[in-house]
Length: 92
Figure 1: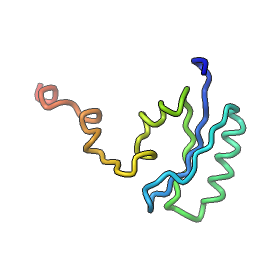
Figure 2: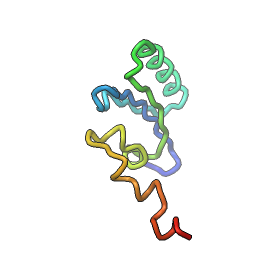
Figure 3: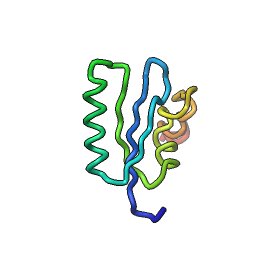
C-alpha cells in the first residue's frame, strides 16, 4: 500500500466480553463515517458495545496504537513504561 493513503477501520468492541466483535475496512472516508453512524445507532441501547472509527496507513498501525481492541489479555501494566516516565526521569 502506498504511503499517505488512509485506511479507515470501523471497530465494534464488546467491553463485557473484552473482545473485538467486528472490524471493517474502508478506503472511502465518507463511507466509513456513514457506516460509523449506522453502527452507533444500531448499538445505542447497548452501552457495553463500543463503536470506534480509526484511520491509519495499515492494520498493523492500529494494532500497535490501540492494543486494547486486539489483545484479550490487555493490561496497562504491560504498557506502563510508555505511559509514565522512568523513575530516574521523574525524580529530576
